Image (cartoon, rainbow, N blue to C red; front, side):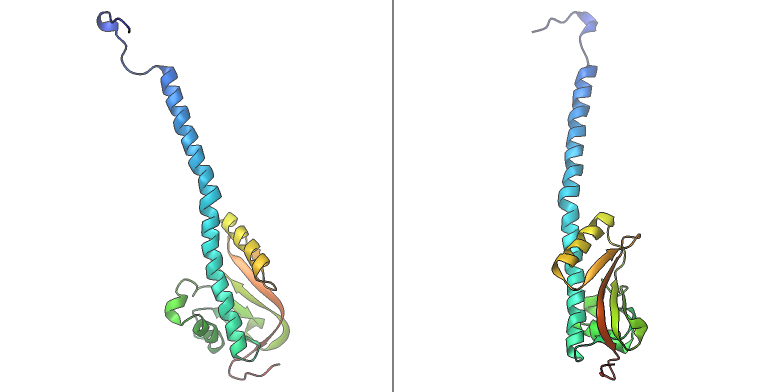
Length: 173
């Protein structure tokens, strides 16, 4: 036990104690940041992949409902284009596409054609790390679809060598 002598008794913390406190707080912040990158970003990527996967499934259901060809269309999922409406209907109508209504769908620029590429372009995702994780999942789980990460963090998802046809004609070009 220390003896106290007059007014010179110790008050406050020493510089060593303050430095030790800052070191502990810094270590905790570092652990939180590492956990964010390791746990949070993959969970965001999983959620984004789920959304994209359901849209791709809707596009495939639309293809099956119109005789095995993709709807020839070019525009957003939320557009009033008859060809793209088939996709929106397969996704459950206007209410269920609110999160993806601004995504771009394109099959041969909206005209009929064979041996063309169907493309779906998302809005920018949370960040490029999430976009890369989602692109990897698409390549692993959705072949022959593949994904490219754009500079703004959006994804361009494509399938090559397909046939596009107008929904009204239903004919294969």
